[in-house]
Image 1 (tube, rainbow, N blue to C red):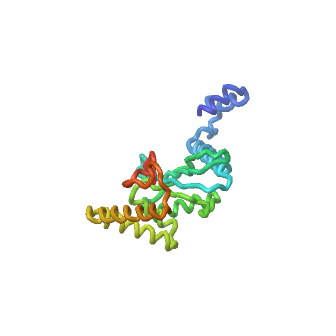
Image 2 (cartoon, rainbow, N blue to C red):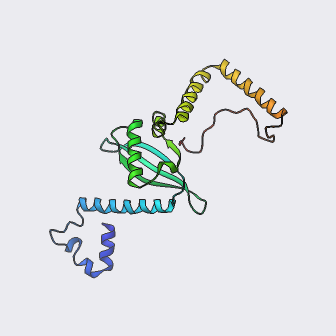
Image 3 (cartoon, rainbow, N blue to C red):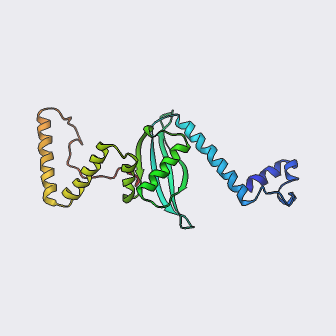
Length: 209
C-alpha cells in the first residue's frame, strides 16, 4: 500500500485511478492480489540469490517453528562464498511442513532443490537447529554406508565413553600415548597451543552445528 501511495504521489495518471479514486471493481489492494505481488517479489529475490551463487558449493541451514496459526514452518538459509571471497548467508524462504521429522524435512528440502533447479551434489554442509532433527542429515544422505557408519560410531562414542569417567580417563591416556609417540617420530607438528588436552567445544558463535 505504501508503494502504491508513493507511485500515486509521483504520477498524476496513476493517482487518478488508484486508492480513493479507484473504481469499485478494482482489486489492486485486495489481499489475494497483495499475496500474489509478495510471492512474485520473493521468486525474483530467490532467483537473484541463486544467480549470485553462480554454481558454487553451498551449505544449508534449517530451522523450524510454529506460526500464529499453529502450523509447522521450515525456514531455510543458504550459506556460500561469493566471487569476492565473502561468506554470504541468504534467507531463501519459509515452507510449511506437516511435522518436523527427518522424512518431512527431507521432502521439503527435495522440493526446494527441485523448484530452484539446485543439485544436491553441490551441497557441502548441513545445519539443523534441534537435536531431534539432526537425523535429517542422515536422511538426506541415505544410502551412503560410510555416513551411516560414522553416525553410529559417534552415537556409541558419546553414550558409552561420555557416560563413564573411567572410560574417559582410558581414552585420554591412550590419546596422550599416541601424541607422545607421534612427537617422538616427528610426525606431528609442535608449537604453542598445539597438542593440548581439550574437551568438546561449541562449533561457532551460533547454535548451528
